[in-house]
Image (cartoon, rainbow, N blue to C red; front, side, top):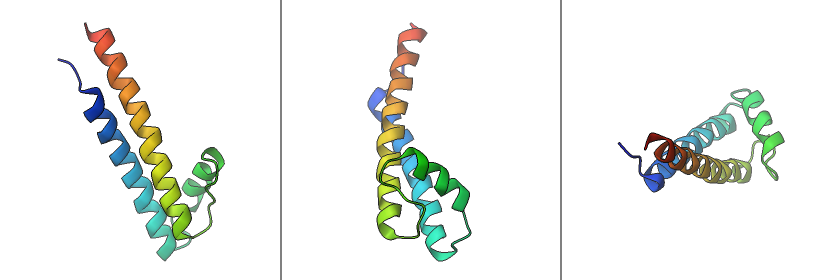
Length: 84
């Protein structure tokens, strides 16, 4: 069975980006929630800060969509190559 590279990449990007968006939005309402998690990602993704702004929430979401989308596509491609 082969994986669809596009579909798997999109699914990974949406799940990871959506998860980051949820944590960032809850952090806007309750500043202590997910603070260490967001600080971790602010050290990895350039331009993202662990402050409580909508701009940071959107930026971390976009990075997550792109990052996990590419990672998921690479995983699906490698899986298809090795499964043959």
